Image (tube, rainbow, N blue to C red; front, side, top):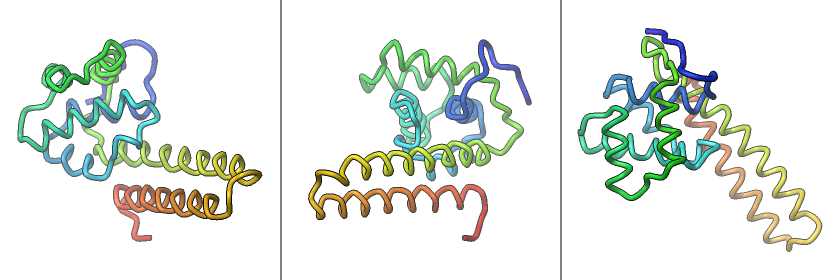
Length: 160
């Protein structure tokens, strides 16, 4: 069902987590398998995602209150994390839309952030870093980008 968000329209990461909070367990488990904490621009959203993943993996119920309890139990709860959880719970995520579409949009943003970060790191390192360090940056960035791309293709159902 499509609901209007409470407050300003949220970003895709918040809507994705809202879909995880209100979605079907089986689908949430499958999609979270392809989404990592560092795919979120905000580490606090990654913390919420990890709490959801922990509950799913332990076959415990999910929902805003259960995630809040898990965050508190693990010592990961802060005012900012609680606010992000609240934003996700009230994001108006469409639970009739397959969660993988929200996940794919999240990974597409993550891919672009990874490319931008790699470019900035290479620009910075090009002038002063050793050749071995520059090569290491290229290798790590390439691995990270291709890993994210493979997960994105999987969620989109692409073959390439």
